[in-house]
Length: 148
Image 1: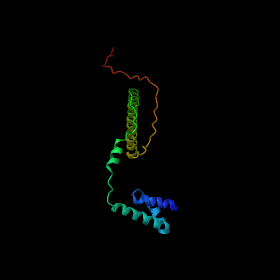
Image 2: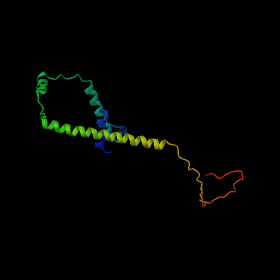
Image 3: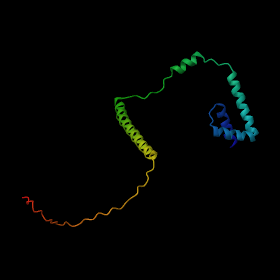
Image 4: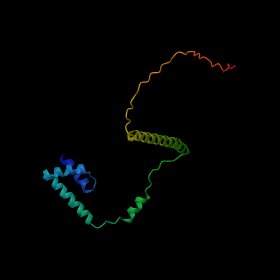
């Protein structure tokens, strides 16, 4: 880490704006660099002085001047409102469809992943043979008459 980066991170650290990894790198640099340790101690002293100082009242004239400033505003014409509504409604519908499809996809994938693995079933080979039709003649008993 360079001196400039360490000093920038020191100021941000005092303001509570440094992530854990950046803070670790900064403290590693501070352990080895006396110049940056001095800078950090000055930043901490300045912050302590500013926090202990009494608040400075804002002059009423300045307050009125700031509140009277009018910022430029964009005009909303009927054409702009119509175009905005024509864009917003289809955009909202497309977003709803995308969310629905994503939810269905994630749900089906989670079902597929949570299903127990299928055991392969034992396969058997069955042979089917067709025999030719045959005509069977049986002798009729003497006491029976032929059916018509």
